[in-house]
Length: 194
Image 1 (tube, rainbow, N blue to C red):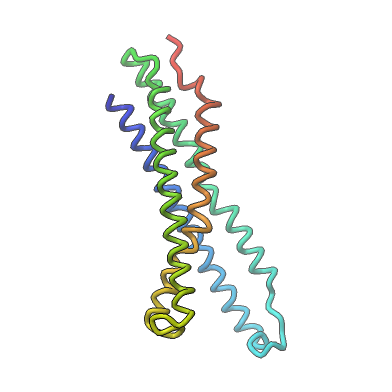
Image 2: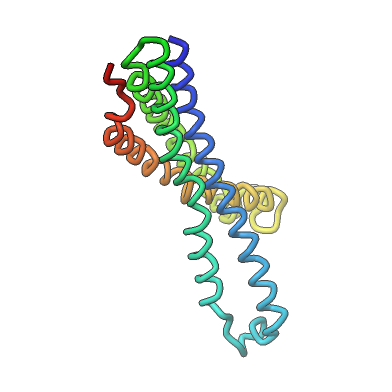
């Protein structure tokens, strides 16, 4: 039915949306760290001459706080969207005389999200690793070595690759487990007892 197919597409969309939020969180936090490091260089000129130590604790605290706060939106999305799909389709099923519509739609949602999540995680982990390895390869002297245009491009690629392989890729594993748990635990509320 169209409702089941739409629910499946929403499941696939969830994986992409979740990944984009995770990657954006890394970029936003990295920008905050750059600002903090620049402030420390400005306020502590001895850091550059090794006569003064940087305040590592401030950077660690900044990254820790950001890692917790930036994952609120993806977490709410991962818990909320299956509930919205299940309850919404259950209500639609009760109106149209299809008591199993909510469960069918959540099953499609979970299957599409799982299949898409596996493929997306493979892509993110492999692409991120490839960009990282390309930079390391160029640093060995290939394609002009360090300082070359190829190295500058590889550093840019590695900047994208690190959130891919270190954040978004591994977090999809958690997303898939969370979706399975949420849908199984909440399955009774998706069922219309007509």
